[in-house]
Length: 473
Image (cartoon, rainbow, N blue to C red):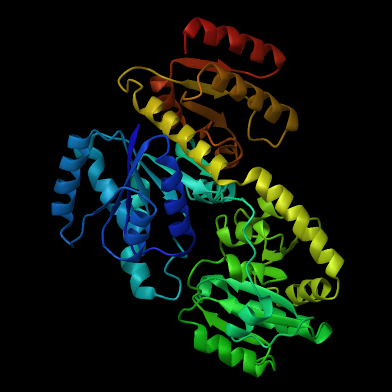
């Protein structure tokens, strides 16, 4: 299998980590070629990891399109995989000349990517919103991201979910903790309980809530210290807030950490995240690798990792008072920190390893290629009609059973469900759904389908199996 990955080349944070770790491991079994639209640290790091990397720079979109089309055809690539707004735009332009399926990984909420930058939102944000709808398939980094995009009327049957995975190999000893923290500017002692975060200092990360929550927690636990690793446009604002709240000496702004993050996470006692929006952040799994007690906002895919009160604490975005209470509780109870950190490690290492991410990605590629090879000119798929979308648990169970039978017979089968509440049906089952009174859309679905299933109940599931067998779906 040969897949070409497109990315701007200026990416940082979770998207950068995801792409580099994924391609490094994919290249052990398939050919995964990286194309960056600029040279720089990202491309150099990819080369250092042994990832085949090509630079396709310039601002002439038509020239880039011609060059990549020729390269893709000459090298025999089978699939185009995009990451980020610029890559999505180029990918949309490559669909027709290459004839290949184009998939994008949605690493963040595209409506919030340019938060606090109105000009960027009106230009790159608008272009990306358009490009996302032109591509064939989309991969959300967590089920929550998929649900969010389906709620915005993206085709529900063209989605996949993937979770950021990391290597949980035990890290080596990281040296003198206190000396390291003091080198970052932290005012720490042997008994200090250090809360840390590694993130960009921009509005979507909502660091103001972190500083306010820390100040609240510090009132009840004077051993607490906060170390913020990262930089961005809100640095000055956050420094002023810490001073205003009387915790200027207890909060250290370390800037970007060079030389890897292992020593940073190994020096912490509590890992924190206060984002307004996330997919499935690496910052939490990296903290879990070091068995850190964690407090995070209940957004995106975070609740898939953190079980409230079991292996960490969740709170609603902006709720600095609850955050403060959680930080104080963890600061005052070392056993609680250790127990939560251990439970988080056990869950994260079992479910969110890099190998599981790679296996999921390979499965997605295989399914996309199968679906792309289906003949498009013939009738295909099934239309299912019943008493669905009424909130009746029995009818919903029947629909779920039918869908399971459909997918066991043909996992790539196009499915359309006629429903009283098509929006909720799309969200619940990730299938196309139309209203039963939308006659023209119903008619179009029937003209394309090979099989029609009407009614409900256990007899219908049995007849459904026989119908599929006769229809050779």
